[in-house]
Length: 135
Image 1: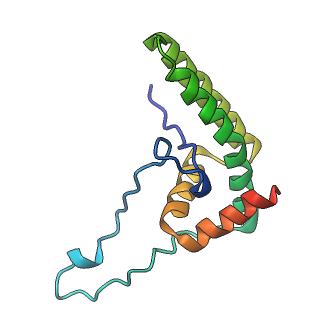
Image 2: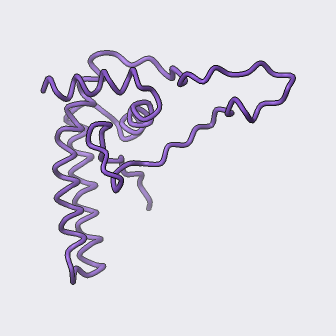
């Protein structure tokens, strides 16, 4: 059984190791044929996100980031067995899902919001403000 694990990073806390690669199903402006109008280079708006969802997302990010850093630190220690790494990952996944549930977010909603934060600078700014406000 395979489950998708949310990516534990926020735009403010990107450190390379936790930054997911963003891919989009939308065609790139340069890849369109001459018969189609050019797409603007501005990010896609995506689904509308309420202020409450932004606050839940920001709260989840604040809780997930230290957990992610701790798990990476423990998993990367010298001499840690594969079994111990897998156990850490399973514990981390369970903890993350608990954090998401506490913040009224599903894993798919969290991942959608993460993609939006990486592709939409205005949305990312709103999330950053919510993270900093601590609300």
